[in-house]
Image (cartoon, rainbow, N blue to C red; front, side, top):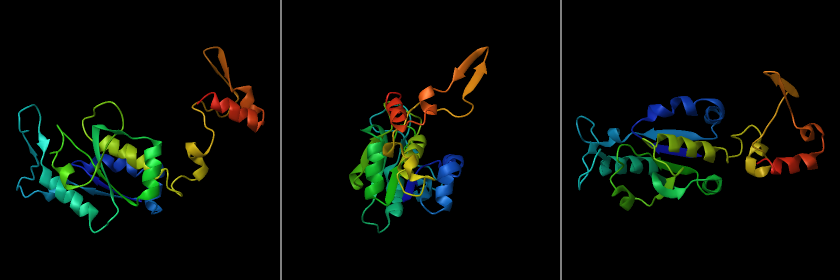
Length: 212
């Protein structure tokens, strides 16, 4: 899986993608992540890519052409590429979306906005899906891009140490426990539920279903 991320701040991704599971997946060549900074695609000598919005209003808007050129570079000659445009007004991203994306595409371009957004003409040049990770507004698209990369990567066989770790392929619970069986804090004891110690997998699965 190849992720192509359009962002003004590629350095924001470093610590997250180079650590833990994603870092190992990159080393093992299960996924590849490339960055395209619109500032590298402007003809402005000061590398400026933001301007005041037409019609007035606060903040600045990212120019269309530098982003268009960045997407063109990321797309290259590939025919089947999914382009995701991040916006609070987009369709809700979830595990089902991640699964379908991982199954049907090997190249994903994620466009991360900043400031008041990106000139809307970008979406008229390329066929894109507008996607949101939740009903709230962030200062930029970098965090949503990380969420999508993480979630989609998990769907790729070999990224997780054990593919059965995928929540969708097993009965999972939001409540999990490990050793010791009993702990004490401020004079009160907290124990692991007896059913988890029983060895009865049918009852354990039933318990997990009620604690999802």
